[in-house]
Structures are given as C-alpha cells and as structure tokens.
Image (cartoon, rainbow, N blue to C red; front, side):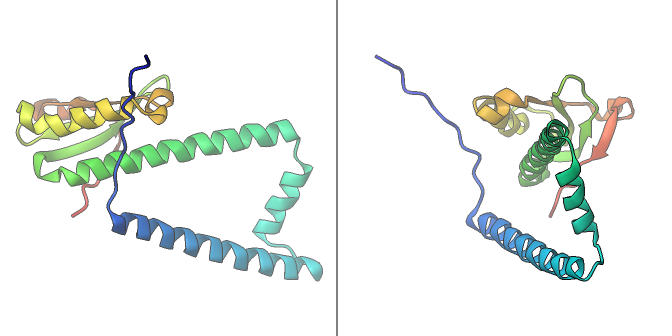
Length: 167
C-alpha cells in the first residue's frame, strides 16, 4: 500500500492572480504591437531592436541558443523565487526589522532576516514556509534557506540586496 503524499501549495489571493493576468495581457499586447511595427519597418528596409534580435536568433548556433535560453530561464526562476520570498516577508512584515538576499554558493538561495522578536513563535511562519517549499519540485531543484541574524551582526551580512517589505 502506497502512502499518500502531501503536496504543499504556495497560495496567493485571488487579486494576485488577477494582477498577474493583467500584467501578462499587457506584456503580450505590447509584444504583439512591437512585432507588427518591426515587421512593417522590415518590409521597407528599416530595422528595430526586435528585428535585430530575431536575425541574431536565426543566425545563432542552435546549441548556443539552447544554452542562452537555459540560462535566461534559470535567472527567471531565481527571480520568481525572490518574488515568492518577498511576498512571504511582506506578509509577516510586522515581525521583521530587515530582510536581505545574500551571496551564496552552489545555487542555494540564501536570505537573512532580522526579526523584531527572536521568539520561536515569530520564526514559525518562516519554518513552515521552508518546510513546505522543500517538498515541492521547485524546492528540490532550487533550494533556499532563511537564516535569522541578530541585529548586532547586521554589518557581517554579505548582502546582494535589501528586500523591500511592501505595505
């Protein structure tokens, strides 16, 4: 008998989905307009940045194209993870003094958090998130760690960027 597996979900509110869909609609509408404009200019012998990019892709070695796309996708995934973690931190901003994305090695995403109250209760939402995240495919391929740093050690943080806690 196979044990049931728990598949954790990172949940967002309904308005988050609407905002993302609006952004996608805006992005693709702009992309379609840019493509049409580039096509019209190309027909009369002029070029745009988009047309130059298309030419480059056509002329590029297919293996280089695959490697470039792979690297771009990795970067997008890392940025998405940063957005998810920023959303987590913003949700619990009442417990956080400062939060940072810090330098790491080996593909591990590391975040340092300075809490207002260092109690276990204040840390619990972050532990829960990390536990759930580690059980996802994303967490297996792109591990992350949230560390709790004392304010006195703030100057020792090898910060990439401070994470803005939205209101």
